[in-house]
Amino acid sequence: MVFVLVLLICAITLIVIGAVVDGMLYLLSTGVLLLIAAVLYLLVRSVSRMRRRPAH
Image (cartoon, rainbow, N blue to C red; front, side, top):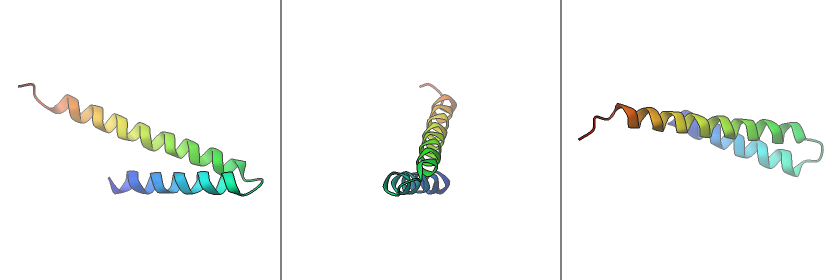
């Protein structure tokens, strides 16, 4: 879980820097891609956890 939080913090930081500093569009793009990767990782992890639980 710490890994995902670090990814999210890095993504948000890169997005903010890329949006504020002129000419740093590549940082904005990298931050967005990192954010998407972190969210997809969370989704895959949550779906795999739901499938492991036995039905009552």
